Amino acid sequence: MKKLNGIKLKHRKNTENSSTVDFPVPEKVTIPMSMTMGAPCQPLVKVGDTVAVGQKIGDTDAAFSAPVHSGVSGKVTAITDYRNVMGTVCKMIEIETDGLQTVSDEVKPPVVTDKESFVKAVRQSGACGLGGAGFPTHIKLNPKADIDTLIINAAECEPYITADYREMMENPQDIINGINLVKSKLGIKTAKLAIEANKPEAIKNFTAMAENDDTIDIITLPSAYPQGAEKVIIYNSTGRIVNEGSLPADAGVIVMNVSTVAFLYRYMQTGMPLVTRRLTIDGNAVGEPKNVRTVIGTSFRELLEFCKADIDSIKKLIAGGPMMGMSVPDIDMPVVKTSNALLAFNHYDERKTSSCIRCGRCVRVCPLGLMPADIDRAYKIRNVEELKKLKVMLCMNCGSCTYVCPANRKLAETNQLAKALIPRK
Ligand code: SF4
Ligand code: SF4
Image (tube, rainbow, N blue to C red; front, side):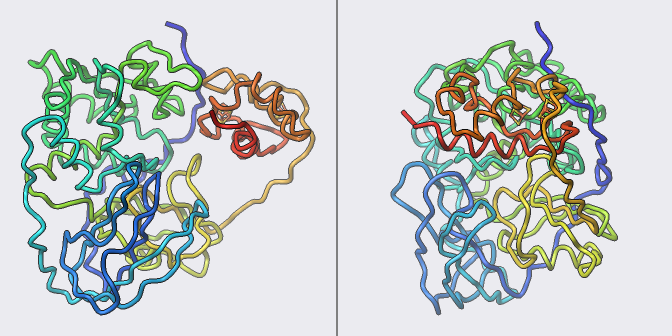
């Protein structure tokens, strides 16, 4: 099997041995109505309403979305407009907590009898991909094509982030139970739990746990970024290629994040929807890097203070990893479903961009064999036909080309802009 390109990054997994610490319930949370891919939800509560933990507070009739629940009990004090890091505008519900954490009557294990009721329950849980992409899980688990393989993405290939790793170390049985749950409800024969080689303890533990189960394979992925990118993990786990314009399901696979599958298992047992999140807080402005579990809606500022960050020194704040994460424009923004890391740095070097020197490094590192320098040139003159020929739509935005470019060209960013020029079918 041909090896895909990848780059060697410093792992900087400073928090890999930090057990998850629970952040106390904050005095106030702000919960956006858009936290997954797809349509934003509309608030189901109004100012002055009392809410309880696990209560649904936002939903939509749109199929491609997931409902929003409260992780606190308290009173709704405001409903405002909110712009997230992707620029999407939605409503945001502010709740003043009462400290009681009264659990809603809505919280009870769902009744699941078949695939249809399972998928319905998954939607009700509010689940989405917890690796950062935020794809609604109920859509993923209801594909039109036949699926024979479930791939569990436990690569966590970006530097710094160890949130999934802590799930693997702290709740391994939930992961195995979640895999078996999805396999049985969807009638999938085989699961592959794919872990990057830089997590030998996790590989050892899961290999022992799955020793007598020939329906779960433990795959060791090479330690070369970006192993967690969907097309890369599918190829490296099964040898299958997801063609341009196709979905993983067209290749007979579903890819789920490892923390998502563990969450789903717990949801089916308890009925508590997705209202908390474990995230890695790190970066050189953070005095005590940690993995913290907190209710969705907690402000980034409070978490940074909790981790002894020097707030005044922060020059760059990133939600997610340094390769694919998004810059955070406002330290008071809230934790959302997709927040797997918050990185705070006390320096930010805006590197000067110069002309391409045709060194070919960007081509050599692209896992998909794209030609980022040519895409960059075609985008500059808005040559849509050339962009199509260069298969820009395949770009996974992994950032490897930008990372290696000696001319500091913002290649991955350009690819995203170039994609927007290609008409959708
Ligand atoms: S960002 Fe796109 S073009 Fe650049 S290396 Fe990744 S997949 Fe290739
Ligand atoms: S890495 Fe940068 S300088 Fe080298 S070919 Fe690509 S765009 Fe040009």
